[in-house]
Length: 100
Image 1 (tube, rainbow, N blue to C red):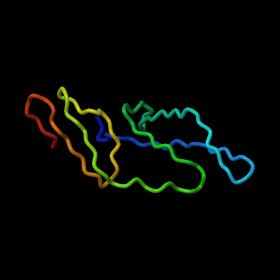
Image 2: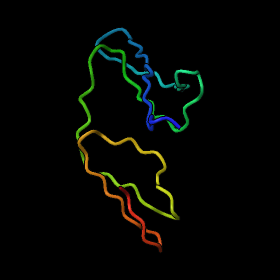
Image 3: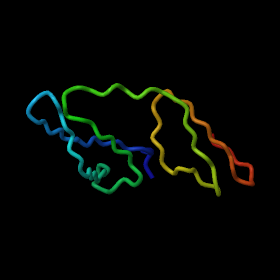
């Protein structure tokens, strides 16, 4: 097992422009296949879609998130967290265990 717990890849969303000042985004599917250096799939990778319009979206602000412990598992199993956010790990199981 590698120390890599979370992988990020960038997928691009194309914007379609129409005549005049209005811009319309065309909906569609984004499919991303994230692999490691040996071309093996990375399960549960997080992929971030970024517009190619040339203007960057405002960075996400840190907030408060929760990852529950239910039936001795994390719920949700994978959750992207903005850097600087606080994360609560409530224990909803009937046994004592803790996140370290």
